[in-house]
Amino acid sequence: TGGSGSRRRVLLKLSGEVFGGGKLGVDPETVRAVAEQIAATVDTVEVAIVVGGGNFFRGAELSQSGMDRSRADYMGMLGTVMNCLALQDFLEQAGVETRVQSAITMGQVAEAYIPRRAIRHLQKGRVVIFGAGAGLPYFSTDTVAAQRALEVHADEVLMAKSGVDGVYTADPHKDPTAEKLHTLSYDDALRRDIRVMDQTAMTMCKDNDLTMVVFGMEGEGNVSRAIRGEKLGTVITR
Ligand code: UDP
Image 1 (cartoon, protein in one colour):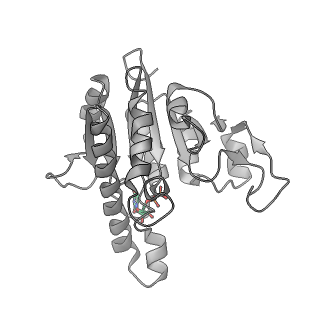
Image 2: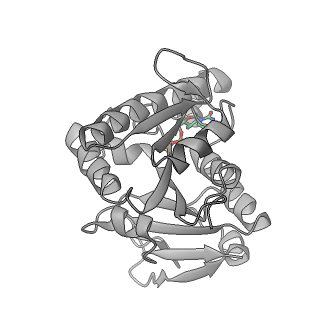
Image 3: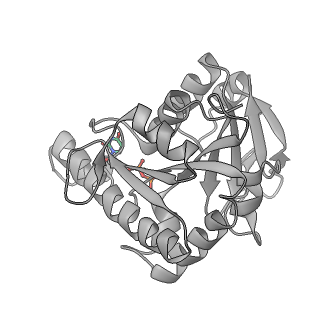
């Protein structure tokens, strides 16, 4: 179990669409609802969070419109930090102590990413929110979720999805015969070219024997339930 303590420790990945409520920018009521679900779990679970930024910018999309890919990726990373601050605010309103750690230094709004300090925060019951991805262009926040989960010794990485509640045999929005998979191996996921998740993230989890749970945000209390260890959605293991 997580680190040296006996409490369960999880790494929750929240993609940008969770913050925007399907639109550009931040939808405060959506973020508040997620924050309240997280707050309900912190008495028993240590929670670290990696935040996406697709509700602001995606580097790959901007580069298709003619921007330099790396510069566009930095814009994408900066977007994630705004999501971190929104989540921090609503978590603190819900009575939870938090720290934001950014992979790009910006001392006025966030600590620097210091893994040992992050672990210390978790042990003290603080929620640690990781922003700015890896600080590196050409990476995704899914991959960062796997990396941070490994580095802080999380028991599981929980991938919260919007609009889909797990991994299916085909795209459930397009193919009516698509069936939900309750368990899956990383080899199968990689072989089937499952697009719900970044392949680099899956390879990293596979190589290091880290369990991933892909679940849908929409069900009542789903975020709390996943954090507490209910096997919602699809469980991917080696
Ligand atoms: N990004 C990056 N390096 C990272 C993480 C993110 O360059 O380590 C950029 C990339 O442009 C990406 C954007 O930040 O498109 C937003 O992150 P992501 O697309 O992973 O967010 P999500 O899909 O989870 O909302």
